[in-house]
Length: 352
Ligand SMILES: Cc1cc2nc3c(=O)[nH]c(=O)nc-3n(C[C@H](O)[C@H](O)[C@H](O)COP(=O)(O)OP(=O)(O)OC[C@H]3O[C@@H](n4cnc5c(N)ncnc54)[C@H](O)[C@@H]3O)c2cc1C
Image 1 (cartoon, helix red, strand yellow):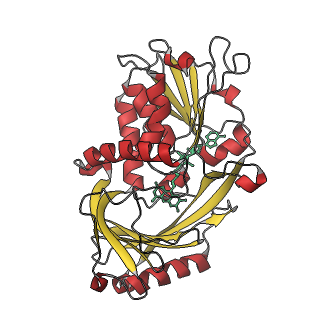
Image 2: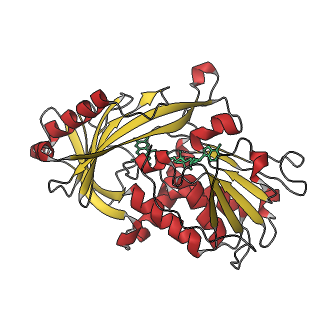
Image 3: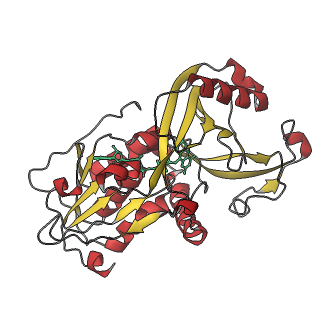
C-alpha cells in the first residue's frame, strides 16, 4: 500500500461509517494530522452499539493476523482501562464449556488465567477457565471515540451514501461500512449474522461469564457494566433483520438465569440487535469469516487527483485491526480542522 503511505500533509480523508471500525480509524488518522471527515448514516453504528463487548476472537480469521491485531488491541484496551470515562474495564470472569476441556488458546496468556475448580462451575459444565479481560461498555466507548475525534479536529456528518463517489473529493476514502458495504460498494460476498442482546439492571454481578458454544446459534454470556448487565445472545447466520425477537429474548434470559440465578430479579431495560458482516461460506466460493482489508484505486470514479479506498470489513471492537489501514496511511504530523468544517458533536442514539 505504498501510494497510501505517501498521503500528503493535511490531506482530506473521508471515513465512511461511524461504528467502532470507522471511529477508531478516524481518530488514529486525525491524531496523526489528517483532515478527517466521517460520513455515516447512523452515529454511532448500530452493530457496534449492540456488542457485549468482550475482548477475544469469535467468527474471525485469519488466525495469524487476528492474533497480531488482538495483541495490539489488548495493549490499547489495557491503557484505556485506566480511565473509566472510556467505558473499558479489566474484569475477571469465567469461560466454560459443557463438552470441551482444553482452554481457549487466546486466553492462556491473560492475567489471572487458571483452570476453574469444579465447585466454581455451574451445573452441567465440564471445564472452565478464569482470566481477566477488557470488557467494553459500547455506548460509553463509542461516545469516547467521538470525543477523541472531536478533540483531534475531525468532523462528523450524518448522511446515507448511495455510492463512494458521493463522498466528495478526498485523498483517501476509508470504507468502514460493515454490512452496509453490501449495497455501497457493492460487495456481494457479504452475509449478515444477526445477534441479539438483552440489557438488564445489575443485581450485583461483578464478573463476566461466557459459554464456549462453538457454532451454535444460541449463545450464553453475561457482561456486567456497572449498573447494567448485557446478556447474550444469538448468532443467526444469514439473517439481517434488526427487529427484536421476543422469543429469542426469553431464551437468552432463561439460559443466563440458569447459570446465574440472581439475574431472575433483574429488570429488562432494552434489547440491542446488530448484524455482523461475514463473507459467503467458503463452499459457495466466498471468504467466510476472513477479515477484508484491501486498497482500491479508482482515480476516475472518486477523485480526479487521488481517490483511494482501503476497504475493510471487520469483526469485533478490537483496536488492532481498525488501526491497520490508519497505520499504513501514516499521514503526517500536525492537527488542523478543515476550513469551514463544523465541529460536530453528536449525541448517542438508541439502536434501531
Ligand atoms: C449481538 C452482538 C454482540 C457482539 N459482541 C461482540 C463482542 O463481545 N466482542 C467483539 O469483539 N465483537 C462483538 N460483536 C461484533 C461487533 O459488534 C462488530 O464486529 C463491530 O461492531 C463492527 O463494527 P463496524 O464499525 O465494522 O460496523 P458497524 O457498527 O455496523 O458500523 C457501520 C457504519 O457504517 C455506516 N454505513 C453503512 N452503510 C452506509 C452508507 N451507505 N452510507 C453511510 N453510512 C453507512 C453505518 O451507519 C454505521 O455507522 C458483536 C456483534 C453483535 C451483533
